[in-house]
Image (cartoon, rainbow, N blue to C red; front, side, top):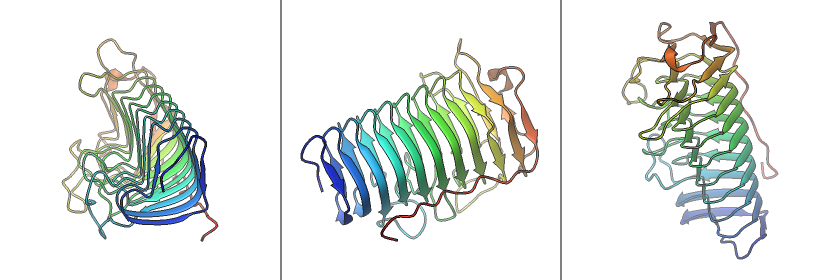
Length: 304
């Protein structure tokens, strides 16, 4: 299915696409809603130059993924948006994609009520959600769940995307030697708030420069991490950070990051909680205490 005009509504479809993209959107203001999409050699939804696209009440599954481990191609993404400013995604379930949602050059993207499962890679994919050069975007009310069949990198990645928000979510399971639960990379003035990470190895929360692109002024508020690991997992190497929980660095002259009202519990390496402390405002607070993580999101659709 390919869009034909601006403002088109594509709805109430059950799409099986073993070759190519399930739905391709090339026009502005298109609405895609109430669809189930199963795809193999392609993306579930691929949109390019589709400003203001609305994706609503969708279930997207990469049925071309192997039973376990890295997927066959970094390009087989469940939802891929390129140059689609002001996109909206709500009530979306996505599973087994190279990345489940990948947003590039799409400022102002808004995502809410996302149920995400089993990201498969291979590198450089492996994220449940990645914002790439998409400033002023947000992800809220979500769960991003992986497991032993997954092939992860960063679970949630904000890459070279300033002023983004990640709020009220659950991030579960990572088996990458270098991936983090929530990674703010080469991004300034971002907010991560009320997010729980479970079973992370290389880091739960990170805010760092990326190459020549700096980092600073990011905030982690009421973020929690528990049940971390620090050994090889699922046939992949052990975490390269020695089980670090919060990884914070800033570029020269940048504002320091903020870490406030956070907590950790049941850490594989309880002595490796935060580094570098010099990159964080004084008065940072990370307590050690037990907590029950947020419940995962479960969406129900008409076809279930």
